[in-house]
Image 1: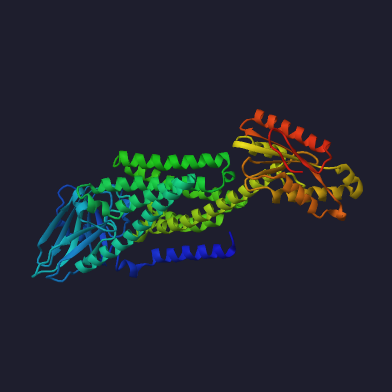
Image 2: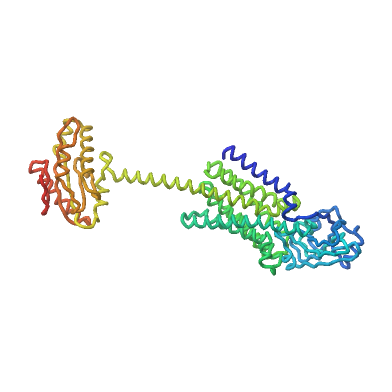
Length: 563
């Protein structure tokens, strides 16, 4: 990978990270919009009521991290706030694995509004970006001052009530529009790349194209589910079941990415242990996802940790792959590095969040879609580059094959067909064929007079005479030292007297006079016995021409040639 490409890749990755962690202005328009609320937590106990908890906020812990509480039932109290009377608003929180949420809204006059959200209720209230948005109707005479959530069956993998916000209805609508554009753009990219590469696979049949299509298809399905669009399409799906689908689809896309890398790089990159490591990573990703989807909420924290460790294995796997590619001087290393730098960085950030090393953030939670959209486009460029190199290799192989075949089929001195190639092309021709055997007269005397180099030049010039004297479709070959053969259709006008006449006028080295004798025969040439019969007849005619004084043509059977 060149230095310039490396710097551009790093700059792109850093810009994306800056966007993800410093996107407050972006988040003000999309995602979990609105005014953030600070919250405090208390573990639920029998006899607790919303009224008593609103009256006794000291019972809540405001310093302990939410993930330190473990799983269970909780009450979560917001700090005092004030929403103007006469204005409807949304209370927005991140979508998490929970059985039931009850939102209590305290108004300034002491009244409490209650909103129950079960699994289907969470699905029906899901905004794009997987944000649970509960609409609170306006009260003309009173403002809301505090929020209280009763969360039941919280797995607390990422928190209990994460990123709570109060949003105006206009803010929420703009967020949905912005996120719709974001997801639609990603979906359009996925559909276009999927169809394009599937069509290419139909023509080229490279394994990495199928793996790429599987990866893009799984990512598109993951975006459809994780964005909340699945909830809009199927509002009766439980929100926790949607999360199961997320786990499965993300694992499938990651496994397809490993398969893509495995088939994209040259085979020499993957030693047996590295190939086994790729297989083990795919099995771990799919296996832990299947366990989570099938067994959660049983031991959900353990299942989630195993799932995260499988992705950690994926990140670790990229190191030996890149190292081997660098060591073996792979043609595709820089493309792979550029395409996968951002997904690896974002996957590391998301993994750190899954392992509770960094706090939840909307753009971390949605980083997979953003990074993989870029990765999918760059990988498509990588595929195009790979196909270009494969095309070059194929063209070079074709040229080498043509050259090798030409060397195998061609007489190196004259450039005419050799005997083997001549017979291969001649036998099987339909219709009657005319065979001419031409032999230079007194060629030994020519060699003795002007030397072997001069004799070679005479052979080349005679070959040129033959090539320029035969009709289109005829075959010309050198089948012996100074013996040549011509095959053509009997009715094509192959005239030996024209060959002899042109030879007499051809300028030879040292103005030497060179003549030839020709014998011909006509007959079918469908099989090897036909060839032997035709050759014997033409050879007898050639001997007759030599016996009759040379520099003439003779024919077997009923064909007569003018001398």
